[in-house]
Image (cartoon, rainbow, N blue to C red; front, side):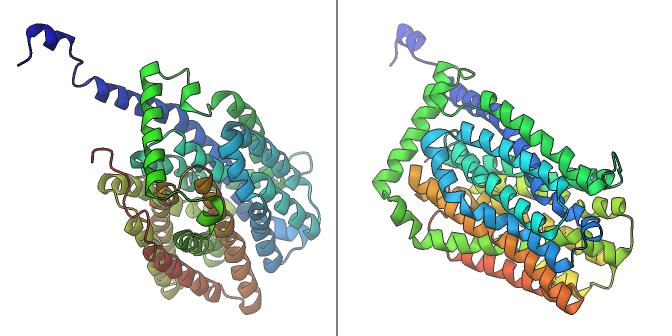
Length: 443
């Protein structure tokens, strides 16, 4: 039995729990809202061309095929620097790399306002993609510096929630900006100017606000710094004992290839819809630009809710594979229904909303998978590989739909292609053998 003196000197049983809860809460509050804002700005600048397409083709004399090519060519530039960007974030400084990326893409987004030819459109879109390359993998790598494996799906959901919300915010904002005519410039030009400036400002702020590593965080207590550093080090050592991959071995890993295929087809389906949805709704309904952009925001509002719930549940039950596969499979089912009932505006809007709602549940469960069986540079390189090749789907989706629309004068053929893309994505995810369960710190 313990003496009274021993009982007084023994640490309180809840002390360790208080430190862990305090550290996790402080880290989440400090980092996730700011990263959330950065990603909203990133997606506003990436996808504002979809809203600009309501006016730009008329002003520049561009065909549907040319607009689809210009929208997609962003991802060719994005592809070119993704893996180097991820490695730079891991080995040099994620904070500095994120700041550099934001300033560069902000300046080039503003430059989009001053194009006059299709060749200039293609060139600047390519450069915007190259400038933004590395941003997403840098943030995913950055999250592994701060969040345990068991907390990572919630962290990714908190950060990735910016993607659907950027459409919720961006669609009505774009509708307002498209109605402007200042200084002889049409609304679509002001759309690029006014959405590019925040990226430049926030890039400078990121340099001073973000912290690269827990041991540098003066905003944590010493006990909290030690706790999170110890937790992450234990995970790192456990991965090395299980299997240590070189970068080359990781890039050739079967599951990395499956994840890459899964992500490619998921993004093919998503971007094919995201870019063309305003135009599709405009032609289907005949509503004003403002009304169309408001309706186009509905899938992303539902998607934000589903995303948070799926990320929370994936961490709760420590399962990733089915939590990533089911959302894209359901997206294919709902898109099939949208095509089948395409003559009805209300049914089309309902099912397109369900497509977006289902799809955005995919990301929180997907991105923790490669970081759960790979570590450090191998994980960074593979995140870069998956994101770079996967984002080529962002080129393929809009381009194929635009090409088929030009050839057939109907959206249906292109949408059938996107249905197949969603189903293939889900099938590849179900073949993944690693990362089926998150690390459970209580086991």
